[in-house]
Image 1 (cartoon, rainbow, N blue to C red):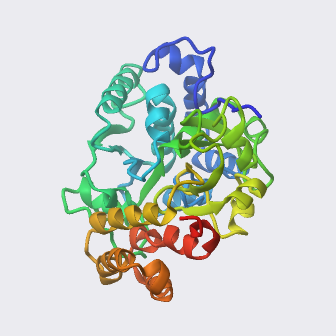
Image 2 (image 1 turned 180 degrees about the vertical axis):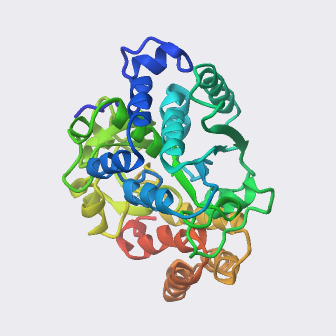
Length: 405
């Protein structure tokens, strides 16, 4: 199995990442001209026909989200690119912006043109200073070519607030507005009431890059990879006990085993050489056993059948010597530290999970851990509290993963 390089530039690409030559070589200039020559309805119809889903974790249909903002009432609209990549084990957006920043930025320009936004923000993780400088160079080139500024969209880079919670879309809005990055209660949803109370289209870096590459080619080309229900490719960030950690672009539907073991992908398990489990989707992801990995595919439908999701695209690999209870305890402390404290289920629940685990809860308080995790999942305001116990719950559902520890 080979990786596919569509979002990531091909090895034959020779132009500089922020140059006019790259804009032309990758087809982004042609894609921009195509979008600007079409009506908003036609652009959205093409995106819908492509089957593109959001790559930030929720897999929401991109065409539907664009349509909601396009049809929303109001004189002012905004577009936001969410590059506040703070999920543990996830670094795909950083690599994509390092290697090909013009893809995602072209997607921002296209989105703003279609929904009628005159202002867009690229909200980037504060630690990504080198990436931020590269994006600034790419934006300057787009300005010089007339795609940004003048009568079109003005794009501003905003540095992240340094908190995991700031990656949640409504907390991100508050941060841009100069407020504490706390999530807002939904509904209303951002497509109706986002930045400064106006309709806002917020998309992940990878999603916007997919839009740019779609219009650099066409719908049929885009649908050549993937499955019937999930078309295209996905960036996965592989880390842990693998020979070749890194970011790879693979088609949806690829067997998980191939992602871990193919010579030009993960390259095989190191450490003991025997797979213990993977954590799929980052800190808020799901532990999968060796048997589930052997039968699983990188596809939303097949993963949903075993209670898992692709999430952020992180694949954290553990050999069979790792104590997964220890890993879960580390994750619990991370969420307890990163909770904004706004809602009780998350503020108290994350702290209580840490206490129960430290008191030996995996052996004596298993049911208490499960009930607490379910309460947080169902009652927390935002995704942090709702997904903080997911890894814990997945481990409780797979007792065989902790027997060796």
